[in-house]
Length: 305
Image (cartoon, rainbow, N blue to C red; front, top):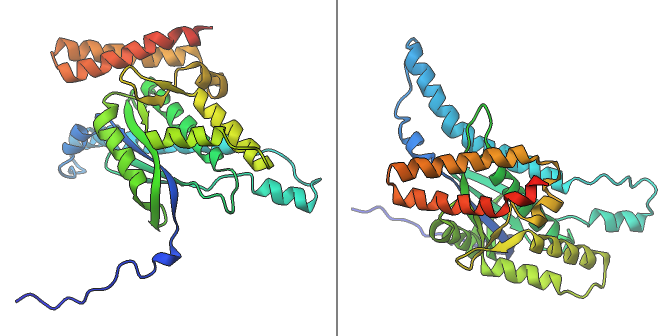
């Protein structure tokens, strides 16, 4: 006999939660699932050989996922850094200055996926475009940096989707709604290779911010940041907009300290992967790396100067 279950209304405190526009990003750190599947059991500490193999696998999987998190946070905080001394400001000026910021970005990680969310409400923090700009810049910089790789953790490619939609924050960073669903669909069904695809509602939001009438300092900043975002977006061959992390705009605003050798290392990884999968006649992966190779070759001249 089934036990009696008392039904409780799950949304009885819904009025205490914020429903509104959210930016959501869904990122897949590619090539990690097979490595994760091989972690079946803990090794015997006395077996030094298997113990080393185990932690090499941990470094390739957990280390790579953690690297994404560290890189994104580093780039995001750098793009949000404010260095203005406010000691000479009047109280009114300080109040305005303290509102020139966006809401904090929330980051959740599970397996080899990363979900980002950003509330676009502007009732307290008046410049949500600061967060939008920082998310786009930081994901692009992280994608490029992971392709270039390091001596500790080799090159890794990521793909993802970013969009905007109605959402409800059920708990700290746990956003439910259309925004995350759209971002996941873009990553899962559209992105295919190492690119970050942008949804229609995201583009509409940027265009709206670019067209606002500037009646306050906040409007001016939102408008200008939307213009900067537009310069870091390109349309791919299939008609989808994506973060152009090798483009002119990205180099101008984000890539000033990125050397060409960094770009070249990423390009070398891409061409090696393409050649490997072509040799193995893996048509799916060979085609995806061919697309990525072509993207690099169309942009390398920008970074050679």
